[in-house]
Length: 166
Image 1 (tube, rainbow, N blue to C red):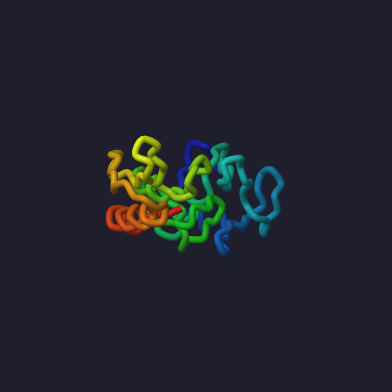
Image 2 (image 1 turned 90 degrees about the vertical axis):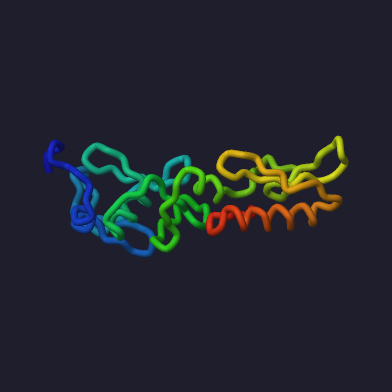
């Protein structure tokens, strides 16, 4: 296939790959000698599986979504936050804000609860989260458990299906 006539399409992906349980397998022998039936792609240092097609690198989850639905959204979200879990039921269209709402607890968290920190000046736990890039304070609480429950409830209401509590 000449580089000038190359474009991704649902039909092309079905010609090149077989989808099985979140993975893509080559249906053809590739130019660099990979046999048909072999798993496509390599894991990169960010945790995504990448696949080379016609001198260009693609993220496997985007190819899988295109194979199943025939279009590519602005962004895709891995529901379980596992970047290498490309099962179609784990992928959903999202925008940047929704994708950020579905983030895990930061390893820098000192409380171990997403959206809760200790306010040294008030000697209480502060619960807060973001809505459309704006920090929303839920309030101050005496116990970590009260703060965790309050921020999780507020996050669920505002982030809906993209709410991730840690």
